[in-house]
Length: 561
Ligand SMILES: O=P([O-])(O)O[C@H]1O[C@H](COP(=O)(O)O)[C@@H](O)[C@H](O)[C@H]1O
Ligand SMILES: [Mg+2]
Image (cartoon, rainbow, N blue to C red; front, side, top):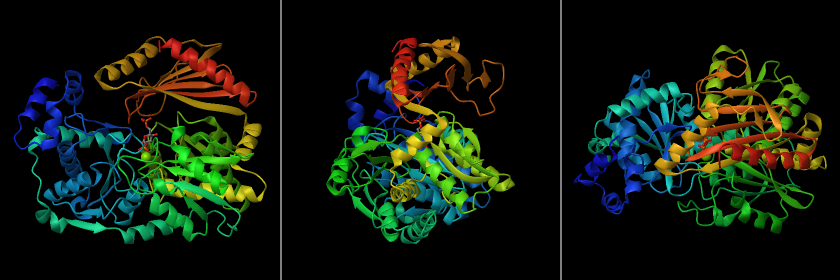
């Protein structure tokens, strides 16, 4: 795309929003290029980008354009206009405005919408799609990204984010919109008959459904304390209501409860970033909590800290999920409720520990590409055939789902699960880290870590492509002290041993080392980053940590970073 021509077009458009116009006037050349060199695209979880002026930014014009494409796709679904679309949004700058604008654009196509009366989390949106039997859904959020971002997640009628095949169809329709600046939008009054404001009714149904995720409902909760922070996001009420109703002693991190687009009282709203737990740990120390739970702004990810030997220890998404899985499977087995055709889903960049736990209970494991939509898609397929029964789905990035009444990751379900696990094991004299250590003793010690190289702008995007291309052109045969025994290229769908990978094509490389460790690389689909995943096997935790440090250095040296 000719970024200069695009920029001029926007600058000279008379009706342009005044604040966007001011922003355009103050842009330097490299910002102009980044803002206009392409259209903002669908990635791992819908469209996501910086708020601001430009075709590669999130703003009212790109939202309108995206909704025209989505509207056309909805109209192709059986009875699509009438079944309609559920719409929710989080606490971010512009979230409510984008949600409302989406409803109006859809109304212009005669599509009914169910618009949340105030912010609601991503999992509740997925639930609402199913509850109102909609043809699709929209969630306005940039999840855990910094405050300058926003995004647009789109859903099918099962409450699952659009898989690439369908997202491509939407994109085709989006690209047919020639001029994003002149999309016709009905006024609120014109759209009135199509927009249904919803809230309490779906809240109640959702909360009731989440409560059914308790595995041992009779458990006494009196000697267990959990500190919780919604990180200024959408899970505040859902999590606190559900846990209160079930009798948990939940202490909220009050300064992080109010919805806030600037995330004023947290260093980062991302559970992957350790500083995001600082306030919660202060509260936990004061009240002597057993477990700390923090959810991300759109309420689909949960990070957990467990009190272990008097210290608060942060668990990775891989670790917490392995413990949940152990709890779920051991309890279902004890209750005689573990189906013989049970299946668990995770992704190709998720630790092997969860898989080993699942298999030790005779549960089958299937791996998908990164993106919870691929897990939701699997649930749908097996639901149709009845061949396998869903038992748990998770990713390394702190997302999981326990029961499939939600088809995206659900941190409300996850907080309940973390609380129940913490409480259950406490009664046995153990904490969550003790349970994790037992799993390591049984299945082997793994240390998972990630390096996410931040590479912003046009130059950054080029550098990420270059890193991936360099690795791909000449796959390493040795990383640090270890031989690479197998290389997988998910873009080419092939392995170095000549076998084929049976997954949709994706820009991911994975290297298996002779000692059972692996390293994977892929560009993030939600942030301008190149991600490297390390799953390193060791004799014990210290050994795994020392090896990780060396392998991380070796890998970075390989790519010249
Ligand atoms: O950000 P969320 O919570 O919407 O989560 C989204 O992004 C995560 C990170 O993706 P990437 O590595 O491509 O940045 C994915 O793991 C997840 O499936 C997706 O739903
Ligand atoms: Mg999220």
